[in-house]
Image (cartoon, rainbow, N blue to C red):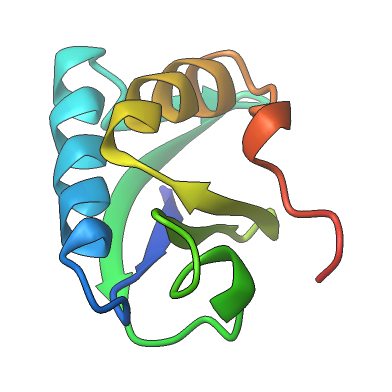
Length: 106
């Protein structure tokens, strides 16, 4: 079984990164997506906070956090706790990125 990691930047002046990570963990449990099946393979889903992801203009200077989903390499910016439900449902559950949060200049 492989792992899908959601790395959430925790380098903001506020606690938003921690709050986003907490909200993602709650949504994973609530939506029963702590494990997902992609292309016939089961993946465990893990949310982890980390220090700077070098996306400060989408993180420290905004009101949300930056996060990356690995190994896919999908980047989101200015993510707030209220966005966790959409990320879990759309990205992890339906395998469609949440377009309004995507970063396209990495």
